[in-house]
Image 1 (cartoon, rainbow, N blue to C red):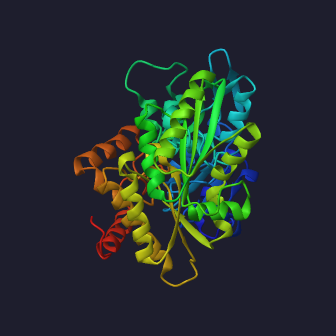
Image 2 (cartoon, rainbow, N blue to C red; image 1 turned 90 degrees about the vertical axis):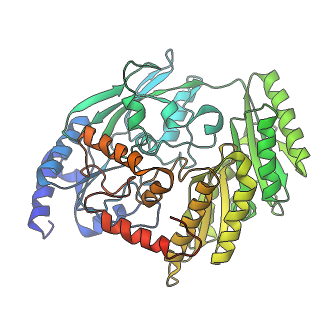
Image 3 (tube, helix red, strand yellow; image 1 turned 60 degrees about the vertical axis):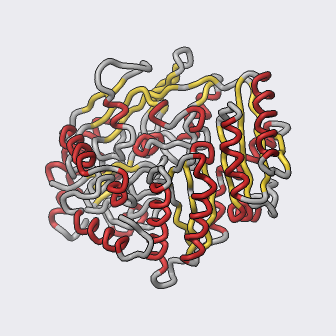
Length: 485
């Protein structure tokens, strides 16, 4: 048992709520839960794995009674520090709640638990000729609950929208322990859209215990193309030109030279090693419309300097092209000891100049930067490669990340497209929101009764016990040449 008396009492009560075998508290057991997919680290006092909504409610009650924070977590694939227990307390891991409770193909909905893996839901829906559209690159391991927390997107966001467009209702445990539904089983419900408010709240308002999602029909025809360019500039220009032709692809993904090399070294999917960038473009719909759209895409790419546009001839070739995109970020692990994955948004028309700025900044800081991103909706994902064992390197990487985020904001964009704000980017919220805006967001927490009890120090730049870290973060940016706050 823990040595601290208060923590021992907390653990005992959690064991009564969820069972002794489902509570972790020894230091060696907590190590695996002190981080997600970001640089930051924070250790919880205890980790608990509930089985149902009633156990979640009991866990919330225990945390309340002991006056410690509670942080919901899925598979731990988050990229903004959103599931870190930065003030200790209870980490509520939802991975045991992983059942598909209902698959209603006739009404095109499914009711699931939050620990269901994204790809598992897609695979089950496919048996009925349906699909769940949001498809983050981490879909093999990320949970639907985590997708809801950050309003995840994915390659197919361009045509189908992000998670909030496909979640009809959520059953949640509120901070006072009540279990209730926000939204329902219909496309529209009367009254304020509390469901929409909850999606993207990053675990600060409550904990999701069930989800009703909308499914869509798998289209009868699909065309997947790989356009090969000499430069990122040329590929970026082609993105806007495709949209200008009146074609809205379901996906339009860009990989630059650094990512192409990493993917080919590990996966050999057929990306050309001498390309400066490639665009992976997919259109779907009725067969005649797909062929017409594909022809327009090819023409737009060639008009912007594509030396070749490859069309996947069959499903196997299509899957191979997508395999390289889906596993592209993971492939960086084979070529760099560490990498810092960023998430910003810019207008499509600003892609060429912003991408030049990203690469110029990276060169000035002395880091290699690999880019793989959702070009169609301007959602950038620069990956800064570094070695954290080199003294001072991690701090410089964070400084560079701040400059890149500011570059996106100055171009008329935003600080996140799908990874959330979390711990990582809460200081940047003041770049895009006024003091009144932030105060209104704080009042939402008050309305839900969560305050700083649910997932503290996330999203908003200040909070009880979080101000010192925020001030330190701001001083770091103020001391960095070229960063404006």
